Image 1 (spheres, rainbow, N blue to C red):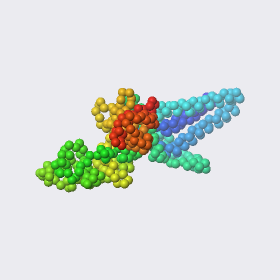
Image 2: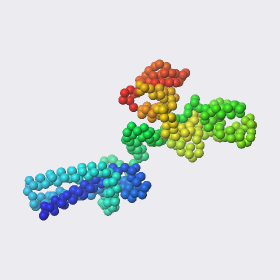
Image 3: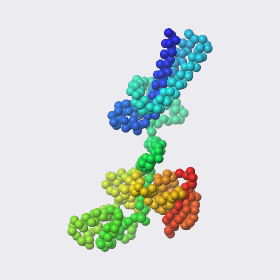
Image 4: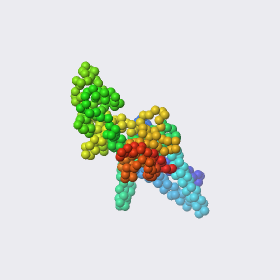
Length: 423
C-alpha cells in the first residue's frame, strides 16, 4: 500500500510540474495580436492572458517558483521513502526512473503540448495563474528584487517594457515570416504592410514629383491661355508662378477656375486669377511621410510644395503620392511592373533613370540602398562618382548596370542585371 501511495504522490507532483511548465510556455508564446483580437470581442480569458503579459516578469517568476517548489519536494519524498523501504540498488533504479519521468513529462511533453495548442492552453491556465500570482506576489516580489540587485551588481540594468524600436522590429519580423504560399494577393498584402511601417522612415524627398517633371503655369499668361492649359492638363491642382518658375505664388484648382466662369457668368478675360488661387503650402524635403500624412489630414489639404534647406523649390507631393507608397500604383491586370520599369524575359530590368529606388526594391524584392539617392540614376552616379556615358557597363553591388541612354548630364535609361542570388 505504501508503494502505491508513494507512486501516486510522485506522479501527481510530476503532473503538477508538467502543467506549470506548459503554462509558462503557453503564456510566453501566445500571440499578443491574436489575444488582443479575442479581447476586443469580449473574451475574458484573453484579457487575463494580456494582463499577465503586461507584468511578464512577475508572472513568469511566479510560475517558476511553483515549479521549483514542486520539483524540490520530489527528491525529498523519494529520499525519505528510499531510506526506509529500498535497498541501494533499488534506490538507484528509482531515482533514474523518476529523473526520466521528470524530463519527459514535466518538461518535454508539456512544452510540446503548449506549443501545439498555445492560445488554447494559455486561455485555459490564465485564471489559475492569475490567482496564484496574486497569492504569491509578496514572495515573488522579494525574489525578483534579489535578482535585480544581483544583476545591478554585475552592471546589468533590467528595463521594464519594450522599446518602440524593438516592437517595430518584431512587427516587421512577423510580416516577413508570413508565408504567401505563392498567392499574389497575399504577397501584395505583405508589401503593403511593410510600406506602412516604412512611412516613419521615408522622407517626402524620396517620393516627390521632381520640379523637372512638375506641371506649372505662368500666372502672367492671358486668361485664354491659362484656361487652355487647365483644360489640357490631367491634374486638378496646378502651381502658378510669376517672374521665374521657382517663385510659386499660389495653387489653382481647375474646378475652382471653371466654376468661377460658369457660376459668375463671366468671360475668361474678366476672371481675376489672383482671387482664385490658394496660398501655397511649403514643406521641407526631410519631412517623413507619416508626419506629412498626418499634416494632410489636419490641414485638409492634398497638395504641398517641397523645398530644400535653402528654400529652393524641389518639387511637389500629394496625398495620392503617399497612398500609392502604401498600395502601389494602380495598373491593369496585364501590367506586372510599375511605371518606368520593364521586366525582360531574361530577368533583367529596363528602367528610366528617374525610377525611384523604392519602387524597384518593392517590385523585385531587391535591397538597393536608399540613403544616398532617391532614384536609380542618382544611386548609380553616387556609386561611380561620375556621370557615365551611354553603352558603358558597371558592376555595382549585386548588380550589373548598363547605361542605355544619357541625356545631357542625366542618365535617361539603363539596364539592371541582377547577379544570381542577389536581393
